[in-house]
Length: 157
Image 1: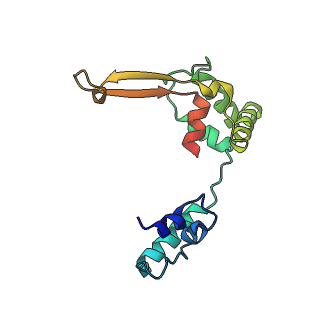
Image 2 (image 1 turned 90 degrees about the horizontal axis):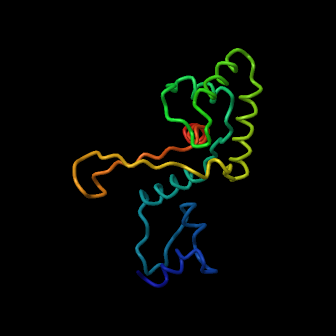
Image 3 (image 1 turned 30 degrees about the horizontal axis):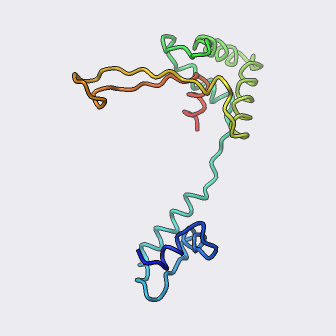
């Protein structure tokens, strides 16, 4: 790659052009080929996607919709909180008793806003199942069991 282009794309170089690149306004040095209109539009569209706001708030409605569809035979969390606990909270929330659902969604929202994992979410179980016969890793299917509320938060987001 041309050394001047390396400087333009290097995020650690004091005179980089990263802001221009991400906004779709980057023009390389005259000695380089100019970007076509299609390439410029593509970069501008990419910038719009990158700056789009993502709502990370999880509501009681999200909680109810997620857990009411889960089957009771789903594997339990490593912390010992069975899916039945969440299903019971969902039934209560549907009957206008929302204290537990409010508490859980508040804890999940605080965790997301603070970019912090709860201690019990830092552990998971990985099970390797044979999907084809053979002694190689590509013949295994890895299933990861996480906490039910972590799966819920990841599903909603």
